[in-house]
Image 1 (tube, helix red, strand yellow):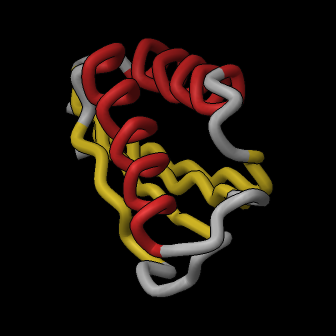
Image 2 (cartoon, helix red, strand yellow):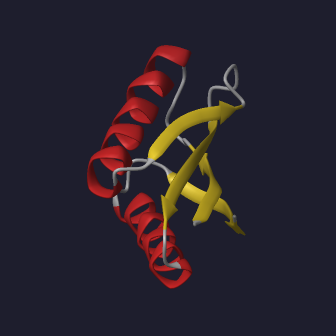
Length: 95
């Protein structure tokens, strides 16, 4: 079994309130969950208007497949165009 975990850090340029941020982040999380059947949540910088950190986890049998899905997840996060991706991190954990 392989667990893939990662973080995506976003910059939200035109966000002036936590309410605006919450709407954008909820949309990003919903899209990533629906397309990849992944566990996704906002994990840091909850009180910062123009920055969001989203964490995710995927589980599977094949390390190559999980790695590929994580790459596609990063690509989708960038293609959404809702916020600028400024950093990504990932780790594959064989169990």
